[in-house]
Every structure is written in structure tokens, then in C-alpha cells.
Image (cartoon, rainbow, N blue to C red; front, side):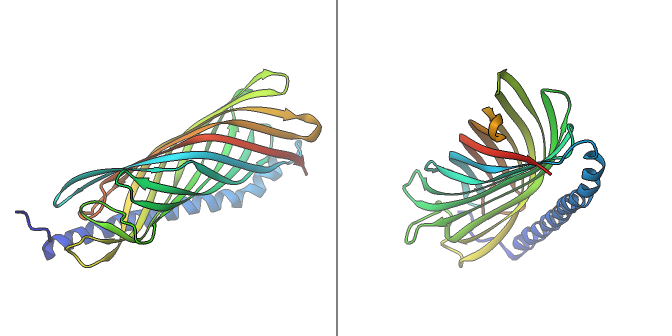
Length: 294
């Protein structure tokens, strides 16, 4: 029978690989944050040069996403392969939606969403699931219908097992909390199509490439409990489609639609935790915004 315990040489190799990945993540995070900081440093210049013949339009409002999600876990470790599916009950994410329009061609958008869900596995084990999701993007208008955009995304979630409730699989259980945090760039395209009068159809699709670290306290049953910090890369898509109505008298837009997000996390350089996670979340969106100029 294969020995459950890795030798010192094996753990040394794992630690070395993990450290290399952490260094890559730290460098990537610095690049992302530097890009965001430089963007905001140049915003006054952009606004000053682009708004000479155009008032600065500010859009502010609130958005909500009634969604449910699924996470497909795959684990390949030193004693076998295991799979698990975690499903969250439908719940609300909510937060602000902001935009600054510098000219007819350029605008900056920001959306932040927060929500809490009840999650469960097929074996009946339960946990509390908390999610943060935000997007910052600079948009450029190609024509009357299409825009392209580039920006940064922040995504995090915490999974806290319900007290005295098993959360894990045959090889380990989470004893305290699983904390997952990602940053990275995104690119996409959006479309606005008039339907009739003040009614419009809106759609966006974007690709994501994120870097992250996951912190988790686990018990492998045959090993002492330990805290892990494991690096990973994530790839994903995000899409929205909605119908919006512009209430000209109040400079207000109300939109309702749907949103779908798919992300795959690829864990690297570890032998005692997960190999990958495929995460899907989808549901109905509702947004109301008010526009004014300065």
C-alpha cells in the first residue's frame, strides 16, 4: 500500500514550487495595481483634454444580481482522485454602479457586488458562502453600437463550514475557513442596440485572466492540522444581456436582464489540496442609475 506521508525531500520540492508561484503572483499583483494606479493618475489629464467640448457626465446607481452557483472540485493527490460538487442556494448580490463619461468616445465604469449564500455538498455537509465581485473598466466607443473595454477585476469568496458540520472529502476536511482571493485583467466588447423609442437592448462579453492565493485550514486525518496558502491561475468569461429603458424626464435608466460567469481555477505545485475548481454563477440582474453632469 502506498505510504500516505510524503518524505522530507518531497515536501521540500513542494515548498520550493509553491514559493516560486507565490513570487509570480506577487509580481503579477504589483503589475495589476501599478496599472490601476497609473490609470487614475492620468484620469485628470484625460478629463481635462477630452472634456473641453463635453461636460463631464457622472452616472451613479445601484445594481443587484439574484444568482445561484455551482463549484466543481477536482482533487488529485497522493492517494487518489476525488470529485465534488458544491451548490449554493439562490441569493442576492448587491452594490453600487458608477460611471464617468469623459467624451463621446471614452468612459470609465465601476461595479461592486457583495452577497452571502448557503452552500451544500451532495453528502449534506453545509457552509456559509460570502462573495465579493468588482470590475473597473475603461471603455472606448467604436461606433453607435459597439464599445471595447479593458480593465481589472477583483474576485473573492470565503467558505465557512457550519459549526460541528463536516466540510471536505475522504482525504481532508476544512476545519475553519477557505478564503479565495483573485486579481487580474479583463478584455471585452459591449453592444447597445435601439429597440424603439427609449428602449434598448444591451449586451457584454469579456474574458478574464486572474491570479490568486487560497488560504485554508485543513485536517488530513493522518497528519496534524495545518494552514495552507496555495497559488493558482484562473481563466474565465463573463457575459450580460439586458433590456434598458431611459426615463428622459428624470435622467434615469432602469435595466433588467441576466448574467452568467464561468471561471476555472488551476492549482499549481501542491500534492495535498485541490487540483482545480470550475465555478459557475448565473441569475437575473436589475440596475437603476441616474446621470448628471458637472
